[in-house]
Image 1 (cartoon, rainbow, N blue to C red):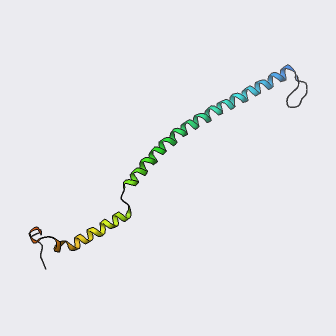
Image 2 (image 1 turned 45 degrees about the vertical axis):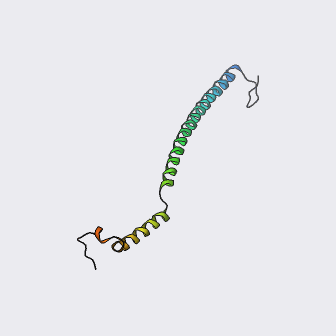
Image 3 (image 1 turned 60 degrees about the vertical axis):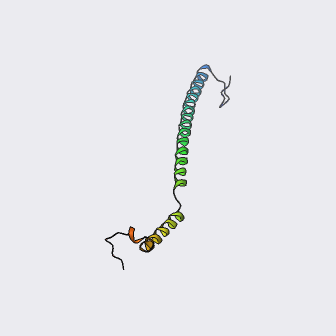
Length: 100
């Protein structure tokens, strides 16, 4: 049998050393593979949680009034406040308020 690297005759001691080295490298690579797989699994779970939170936040944002609606409501309130003494019957006005 020949050495796979240098192609010189491979004695039993050298063969045994190469096999042990290769088996150790395979074990390290398998451990790294398992850790990488676990990391992928953990990140997939985290991604699903973040996607669910994102959906909740988007739903909350959709329920909020837009700026234009708020501006319209503010204008309507301003108009109501400005017209209040004229649009409210005398009987419902505050008796302590002075009329002009």
